[in-house]
Image (tube, rainbow, N blue to C red):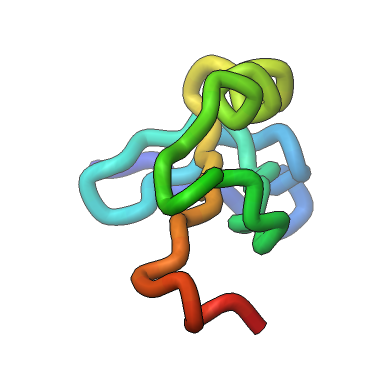
Length: 73
């Protein structure tokens, strides 16, 4: 029989299964809209920024780039 977790035992740092992802905690960084991709090309500073905020077994959704130079809002 599968073991269940009661609501009392669930914390921010409890593991979580989200579809095919097994997360080691429930802290998620949402995507940013800082527009640091110059001319639509991601820069090294973006990789460094997200690497500083990543954790093993966590979920981090990085920012995208603009699909057009006139799409920035």
